[in-house]
Length: 114
Length: 119
Image (cartoon, rainbow over all chains, first blue to last red; front, top):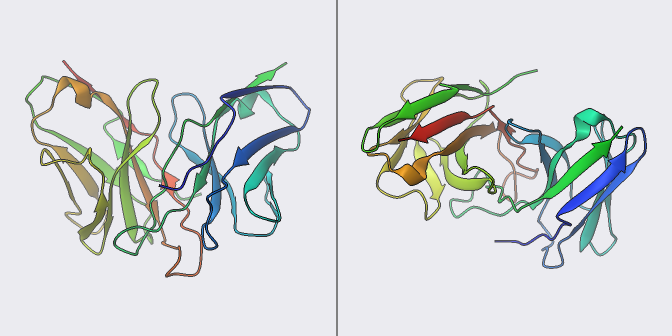
């Protein structure tokens, strides 16, 4: 399975930007980079994804390095509700060639201080 | 916003009993998944399902597990003879598909999970 490396935990102050890094040095040319998060006692929630270019949506921004070996999820203004485990995931082609599975790692625990 | 619905939210069962966990995926999605998360551990892939058959399964998904789409709306995970180590949160997910052969990312929508406690 394609590997990603993330810090175990990070801490942020409320209302400040948060940059969550992810290394994926073994990424191949067709792998999508996904970010999901898991709030306490909830299922994983899609945040954002990208392939080569930086991406923005209402939740976050995704900055992808030019060589694609790393990416950064940016939360522009952290709130207490953003405290969660954030997962950086490479989309892996499934054996059946459809509906690529997503393989979760340990993720980064983000703590937000008020 | 469309959501994936799972029932029951919590089930307690005795070891050796059969359990069925139910999921209603998003209506126009074609790909269905089960994941599990043992308390304090990471989210693990169990199985993916497309066109009424299993696309891929993990080593965890052994003969005691089965999946079914009995009608046009439900997707079920059956555990035939539960063991203590099956205690976990089970998450259902669905997607419209994507990836290498579909020219787009495969974005999964997860349900809130079913907590299974085996005594």
